[in-house]
Image 1 (cartoon, rainbow, N blue to C red):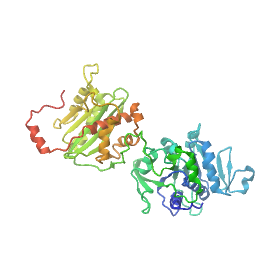
Image 2 (cartoon, rainbow, N blue to C red):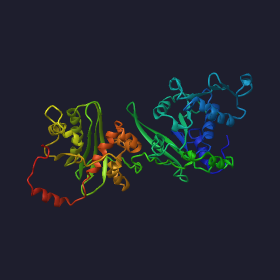
Image 3 (cartoon, one colour):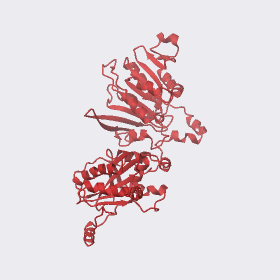
Image 4 (cartoon, rainbow, N blue to C red):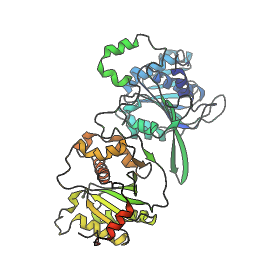
Length: 484
């Protein structure tokens, strides 16, 4: 169980020992990311062996995208690390602490522990996985696993077993390895790294943790995720000729040896740097409310993205979102009005809605969606609050293409756009995952969120002297802005 030599040793040991007696026992999830040749799989199987030996009777899930790849690679690494602990010969099983059953795809230990092998891409693999309870789970090459399958696996960590020497109850954990070839938009990067903070002071960029707060059965529960990043060249125990092998492999290996999450040219917003905020405002008297609105109609998505702009500034806070499917305009507008009124009660004094110009098209019933929207909002929003409903752009002035995102990109580059971490979660997901391919094929709801957000950014007011504006506004004839 000795760690490899070189700078990787500390990271390797920390990954293996997290959650064990005398080490931090609070990270339910841990991921070890990095390029090839950094001993990630070695660390993963060492932890699996440690748990199987020290916690009699523990069931451990060892997972990869396919059982074939698991047996070809990860399982062989496990056998290498186990040495004389495991035998593959059924006839000699009584002479070893553990033996591998090819028929069951399990490794049985004399102390009652069992390592169960799963290929989640195989027929019935996921069903087998969710049909058991585990004291630990280990996933090799997590980037090949769908996020929803991984999250289901986490829910299966509920077996009660105790440490053989200390008697301590096993801390439930799922540990994983991941390569960096999937790019910055990988769900793994978002789940573990975005919003994380340093876990140890001497490795602030490479060893980090992330706090997760959820309400379970009415109780506020805090959990933690650990993120450990290995770098190419830190493993000094690797074959010294390994770089020559990589050079011979050609350009296709470049994604596997990078030291950081890469940016794909397909990403719409590579400028996004997890620019979150969590502030809760009680007084919004100095703010205006801007809403980007994409109305799909029918069974598609209606999306409203709520932005707060402090008067006299050009910074945008995306504070909320409303995403609903299959509701008609009147129903959607009623919910929209309720959210607007929440902001009005906190002091917002003017509201501007920038919508897709198509809602001014006739519906065939003698009234436009824009008129339904305006009439419904005015039933609920106080008449004292100026309410503007306007096309987000003039028809024919916005072409489909990269320029569609320019306004948002400029705000992100200048660090003038922030997203509320909880209330605008889907907007943040759009920034993380949107690709030009998804936008071009009109994928829902990501394209709808993309449109509503850009309508908002395209119509950001420029900082002005509001005292001068008020004097100029008072000199003009006042016309109710909600009529058409």
